[in-house]
Length: 213
Image (tube, rainbow, N blue to C red; front, side, top):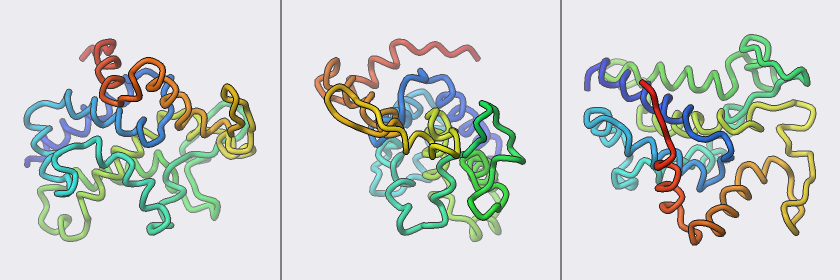
């Protein structure tokens, strides 16, 4: 797979994720929806490239791996800060100021992670870099983090931990605001409009997507 081919794949995945409707938060179903839609809209070459990097257990389904980065957080504890960005309460974000972990290490945020794993995937043709990086994991991290960064509360105020300290009522259930965005909005929509079927929601979203390239 050539570098140009990989660049096209990464560019299209990024475009696909940016143009999805912003109402959806990203729990398990949210991440799956993102990747299912992205995979159907890849070019043939880009789709083949993704399949080459997917683990065998995914059975060529990008949607099945999109929550992997959440599932390994307890094993890869170093990755936890890579899912979000904390900002001051000024409704502004500056990479150099805000992209760091609790210890102040620069680049340790979701934007930094996207930069890092994109750079790793662009080394696909280098034999030396293939040995240095696990490019399958790079892909799995990248597709997940591209979803995370488009969930509004994954780039939120440090003071409320991205809405995790804000209690709200979602219908009759008390939840934290972050969980409502991550999970409740999508699950409620699936139940009410799509018979609790993820693929039904995917089809409905795809019918309403307009991409200008």
